[in-house]
Image (tube, rainbow, N blue to C red; front, side):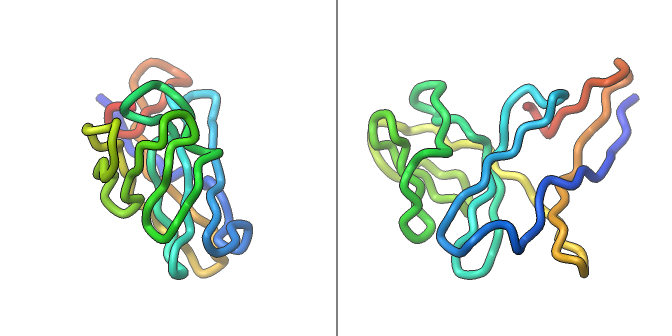
Length: 121
């Protein structure tokens, strides 16, 4: 049986407006990417659904993140693929921000010691 744990991944003040911040944890199967747009923080998987390629070096233009490899675009609010060649959405993850501006994501801890996952990651 798995349990849920809240993992601190960053501080809001460390992410300037219009930028992204990658997050990796040794127990996660895939890295995450935090995106700050209009004062809000969004969390997406840091992999393009067209090709397994990190999105972290892509251009963030408003809510659209462009993959640096082939130019596919994604809406960071929903993960929806909004531009060719990608047609599959990427995963998004809800965040929690506390009074100290720390950003947390909920993770599921597997019964196998040391292994955690977020959704299907």
